[in-house]
Image (cartoon, rainbow over all chains, first blue to last red):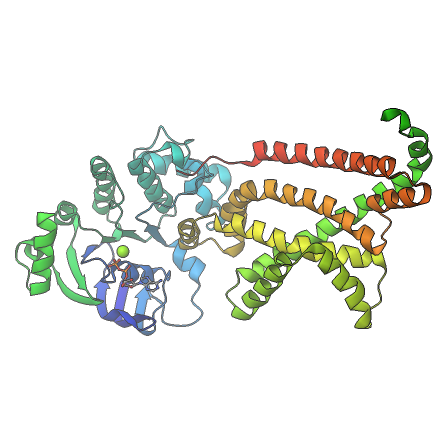
Length: 242
Length: 222
Ligand SMILES: Nc1ncnc2c1ncn2[C@@H]1O[C@H](COP(=O)(O)OP(=O)(O)O)[C@@H](O)[C@H]1O
Ligand SMILES: [Mg+2]
């Protein structure tokens, strides 16, 4: 589904991705963790081409992103991205946020899209907030609308960039619940997060990044309980005491 | 004071004032429409990825904003003929007003566009919306709310600034005051009448601005 082969990326002189090799199969849930600035966001942003890379090969759903002339609209329609800061459109209701892309990218008719939008919002437990504006919703509710916005495109892959880091602690659970449900339904997911409970519960694999390198990868339980590298061990002890 | 005020002379010159008013109106409207086009284009250049366009737009905007309008008017009035370009006063005036307001409008529009967070635009990109769809559904609806009231403010400024065209003998409203004042030596009658007409225009535009402010301000984000 997603295949990185020797991918390198630089921001000017800064080597942000250093020889990334990674294969994510269909239906797999991969959790990516690592210290701040290690390149986690950049890694998943390459998958839907929010970032370009300079060297290496990357296939997403059999589309070679290293080639010129990739149909980006088509690619992005199949991949949903959930941001740390939600980034809902503040002048639209929850329902309008959710159906904007289905109507304009998938060319769905409005009535059909509205049905789909209500159904999707119900899935993330926002059935009573169709007509609320983002400003009227809590952080956890906004993030669930953002997930519904991604889900409404019936994506093949969902990418999450620290989806709970901007939330008050009491709202983290409601968002993770929705993500667990998606994982159980077989969605292919790449999730940048430090939520160890979530990783242990649903991740098939945990990937540890440091300074642009993919340092270690393993089963969640063995990774957290018994890390193989010094750098990973240090990182885990930090998030445990945190 | 009022017993010396000559209403008859105002009445006598009324057709003359009305013609000045009409010209002020036409000049301002035409300049405003052109300034909108210039301003939006300059703003697009200013936000463009190409450094050359960005640089050119910045030089234009900053040089207009840093010099007095009267100097700009004289520059075109006396400067263009020396370059071999002879155009009538009215067109020269419209050119000056258009370029002057265009620079301010470019900045107003830019402020509206950058008020939409980069994150929302990225969310639009990530969901597959193309440039025009992002403009149409995400950026413009929000930018408009913060742009229209100051644009109407700029329109008011332009109307009043058009008075400076009297300096290059364009037959607009202020010029008709000057003419009455010098033909009959009645400056109070002349300029009070002129001021009254500007006041009417001002209140018309001002109420439009207030109304748009109420209509167009969207819900606060957050
Ligand atoms: N647009 C950018 N321009 C320049 N440097 C960037 C940009 N985005 C990220 N970086 C740098 O790249 C490195 C990796 O960033 P990022 O992928 O966001 O890390 P993480 O998500 O793991 O915290 C950081 O050092 C960051 O400062
Ligand atoms: Mg990050």
